[in-house]
Image (cartoon, rainbow, N blue to C red; front, side, top):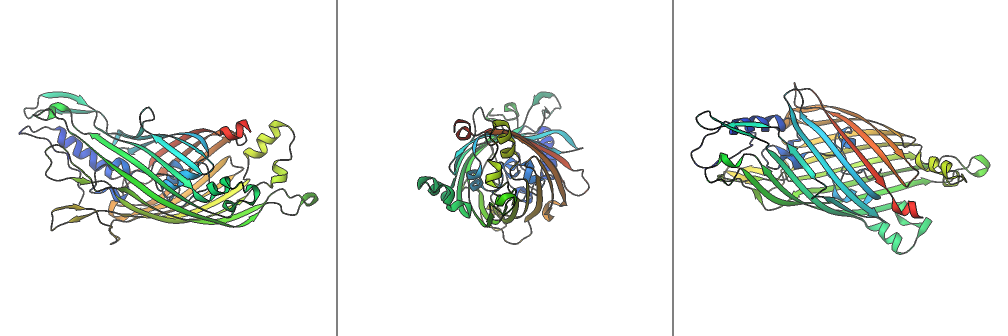
Length: 421
């Protein structure tokens, strides 16, 4: 059952309702299974092109400066410096090219504490359902309007172990080099506008709003860390690190329901339980080699291409946190462990010289008729560790019989601590 209800008051019957119902079906075909039957479907949409290319499996991947806080807010803690990110994706390729979702956010982090701002001038998550034309019950045009959904957010992630390292000035003896534990929280304010004001007799408009929050944690261990292998004059060129991580999050946690004007019942937020694990292998430049250059340009280059090689594999499982109660005739917030509406994904990433990244994955959501491969790539250009620019591209499947959709993201970041050191 796919439910995407839009309600209009009074006795007015408008074609707008049919148009938006079709749009909702098209959008639902591109979303993860957790959004079926839920409102605020824009909040079900992964806004990381990097992890979209890896089957969406980002809940337990703390490696890199572009971690996926959509899957797990604890991963905010691993974003250093001032980071501006922008994401864009088509949703119904070949069916409705003007349905687009974007995400814009700003993060600021240092010493394992990172704050997220995605509200106000930094737009947050915005689902544009295209320009629609409405008519009244007599077929008279009522003009055009732009139905949309928007979610603004703020949040914080804290790497507890790294913060303690800083407070105790552990330096090279830091605990976080071998194990770390992070917690995260994000708060979301949702609103939509799915019909023009004049679609209702009482002129209230077809809008709704609500609030929810995400909570999560991630545990990372790095039992293998060889920084200074034997090599040239007992001063090696490349080291070795290997580790693993486990992550868990509860998304859209709330007791509220989304209720439109004159609706007979509310739609739940897309509450979901997300868990997963990952493994990571890298060949970092040995510190003595990386820091050996005496000129600024050479030092910028050696820091920019570190690690020289990396490999990450990640898996993820999403289960809905709401279900239909036939006795009550409505949805209730309850963990659905039946497996009928679960979504699973896995994928890998190879990085070369911290510049070029190749990604592949697989995603499966039987309830949404999605079962296919994902793919993508990324480019990262850095000025040492002072700042940089990255671009990521992904291709992901829709429901069976529909073409793949493309997703793109880019970010600019600077690290003031490195600049002024």
